[in-house]
Structures are given as C-alpha cells and as structure tokens.
Amino acid sequence: MGGRDAAVLAVLCGAIFLEGIDVAMLNVALPSIRSGLGMSTGALSWVLSAYVLGYGGFMLLGGRAADLLGRRRMFLLWLGVFVLFSGLGGLATEGWMLILARFVTGLSAAFMTPAGLSVITTAFAEGPRRNRALLVYAGTAAAGFSLGLVAGGLLTAIGWRWVFFAPVLLAALLLAAATVLIPRQDVPRRPAGERFDLAGAVTATAAMLLLVYGVVRLGEPGAAPATTAAVLAGGLALLTAFALIERRSSAPLVRPGLLRNGPLLRADLGALLFAGSFFGFQFVTTLYLQDLRGWTPLQTGLALLAVGVDSVLAPTLTPKLVDRFGHARVIFGGFLLAALSYALFVPVGADWTYPMMFPTMLLTGLAFALAYGPLTIAATEGVAEQEQGLAGGLLNTAFQFGAALGLSAVTTVDLAALGSGATPLEAFRTALVVPVVAAALGALVAAVGAVRRRAA
Image (tube, rainbow, N blue to C red; front, side):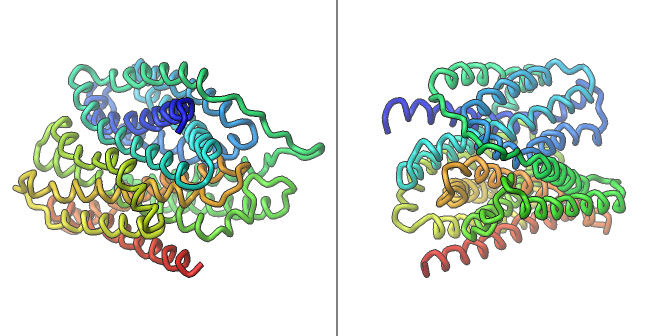
C-alpha cells in the first residue's frame, strides 16, 4: 500500500473511529446527563434513540447520495456537520436541544459513513488489498467503541459536556486532513433528461424513519401498542410503495436487481443479526454491572475493554483466515463464537467475579474480529463501482436497524420477565437469551452462504 493510499485509509479509519467513540462515550455519560439537564428517564432514552433515528432513517439515501453527488464531497460536507452539531450537543442547556443535536449528528453520520466506506471500496481493487483495507477499517471501528467506553468514564468524571467536546477536536483534525488527502473525484453525470428519483428518495427515507421509530418504541415502557403497530404498518406500507416506484423508475434510487444479489442480501441480514445480538448483550450487561452490581461507568468500560481485542486481530489475524478459508466460512465461525460467548453469560450470578465474566468478553471480541470485517467484504464484493455507496448504505442500515431491534427485543423481554414476578437478575438472564438466539440465526444464514459459495 502506497504512502498516499495509507494516509487516505488512516483518515477514513479516523472517521469511523470517531463515530464509534462518540456513541460509546455517550452511553456511559447518560446518568450524568440526566442529572445535569434534569431530564426524565423517558426523555433520556431519546438522547440515544434520536441518533439511531437519524442514522438509520437516512442511511439508504446517504449511500446513494455518495454515488450520485460525489463521495469526497459528501464525506467532507457531512463530517463538517458532524463537527458542528456534536459541539452544539455539548452546549445544550435543555433536554430537547440535546435530542435535536443528536438527531442531526446521526443524520450526518448517515451520509458520512457510506461515503467514507465507498471511497475505500473504489480506491482499492477487489481482492486482498481491499480486504485488508476493510478489515483495518472494521478493526478501527471496534477500537473506537471499546476505547470510548473507557474514555467516556474518564471524561464524565471531569464533566459530561466533554463527552461532546472531545470528538469535536478529533473531527476538526480529520476534516483538515481529509480535505488535503482524499483525491478529488469527478461527479457522475446523469444522461440528459434523466431525473433524480425524488419519489423513491422520499418514500425510502420516510419508510426507514417510521420503521426505526417503531422498533425503538417496542422497547419503551408504557408505549401504546396500537400506536407502535400503526407506525410499523405505515413504515411497511411506504416500503411497499418504494418497491413499486423503483420498479417503474427510469433511474431508481435502488436498482431492483441489486436486491436480488443473494450474497449481498445474506451479508446484510447477517449484519442485522450480528448488531442485534451484540448491542442487546452489551445493553443487558451494562445494566447488570451498574444497576445490580453497583459498578461505576469507568469500571464497566474497563470490564468491556476486552471486547476491543478485535482492533488488534481484525487487521492481523482475520486477513490470513479470509485468504485461507474465504470470508463466508470466517463469518460462520464468528457467529458460532458469538453464540457461545453470550450463552456462557446467561447463567450470570449476583456475585460473579470478573474472571468468571472474562471468557465471554474475550470470545465476543474474537467473534467481532471474525464477523464484522468479513461481513463488510461480503456486502460490497461484486458490486459495481457506481453502486458502492449504495451497498455501503444498505450494510450500515442493516447494522443500525439490527442494533435498534436488539435493544428493543432485550428491553421487551426484560420488562416482561419483571412483570411476571422475576427478580432483576432472573430478568437479565431471560433477556440474555435474545442475543444467543440472534447469533444462532446469524450462524444459520452464514452457513447457507458458505455452502452456496463453495458449490459455486
């Protein structure tokens, strides 16, 4: 890899690291934010949900915008918006201000992330070089999340506003470097008379917003079931309308043929299940450590730090495994390890020591190293250059939707168990079954992909 290619990759890895550390630090700082702004627990949950809503709702449009309007342009523009609204979040004096800032921050990430990923997949030819670049990228994302848990605890001890100000400093440096290093690209020109698929863009974005909002509502205590069902039904209706529009459009936002790509669909479904299993597990584990065991945010972050072994293994071990066995079988192994690691944590006790938890943390990190990066490879392999942004948007939509679904599922199961008379510990154990089942389903999807790839 040449010096300039390595520098461009470093900048793009810095952006995904920024996204991971931003989300992780906020998770740790939530109790302090609630006290500082006088927010209710319900309003506090929207500090997280607003980001997911903006991210998941606009990701598909963001991915296609990178293909149509220019990857470099979209990356730089929305990285700048990310800098601005992350800083505004730190200046918030009311809860609604912070929620609004987080929504726009999520929206900016929805445009920035697929643009950055598509810069990588178009700058590196398909094969070992691209695979290594994507695995370094994936490992950096995992490192951001893992280190963010610790950094969030340290910064929250100084003041929760630094959880927002610190990413601004990093993002400003990345923006300056990206402006210089990422090469200018010609913006694709549409044939004369061809119009932008506005109807498809509107229906796709509205559908994803309603679906993500509906999934978020599933885990909210006291949310009216009838309203949630209506929101989800509206999302599905708009998704159906979007599919009909795309079939008739001369220049569809999402080419229908792309959605008939079996390996891509399996990769996106695997990403959904993998994200759902991990974020569901991480949420329940955090509640167990802080609410039941009384651990501090910093102690919790350090406990989960072992998961960050992925940041070391993804760029070193995983490329060798992918070269030898192929990404489909490596993904299958990652899902099996994930299911095993979560299953080991199901019988967690009220007096478990950290050495008893450590195998789960380590195996989860190994599962991340085997699954996350290769899923990214599988979701972009064989896709034409002019659709790489869209492929990245589909993949990240699956990750975000899976995360929201996993959080809602474990919350619903936990509340149902408590409502039936279970103790908090028993409810946590019941909720931990959800990540196990999701990882097992992911292993099944990966096994089908491995068998078909071998047959082909």
